[in-house]
Length: 115
Image (cartoon, rainbow, N blue to C red; front, side, top):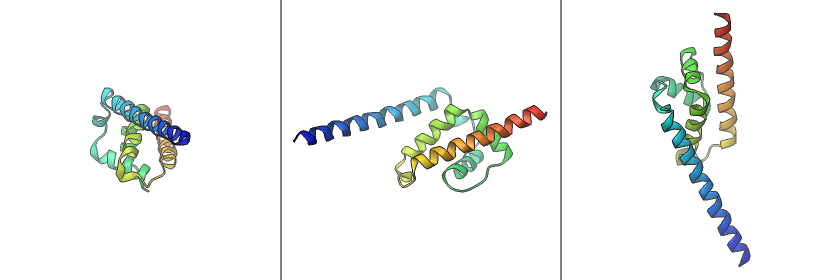
């Protein structure tokens, strides 16, 4: 019986953490107008690059960097919360998302230095 209570507490704790994370991501997205900072075409390119296999144009690379790291991370995490992506490995997607961000930030910064 005691193990059932511990299990129940654990389930409630994990559920509350997930709800808090969802609210935190939604708050970041809302406060920073994240959903309006990139054109639809670039959103599709970034999504394909992170969640599937694809490339992203220089134009969309720039839009992704202008979007900002906080927006980028919150949008990726919110997408992972969607039941359509339940079969994806969140850890793999987060790593791919961070790699994408770092590559494009370095690319934009190198262009700025050479200009």
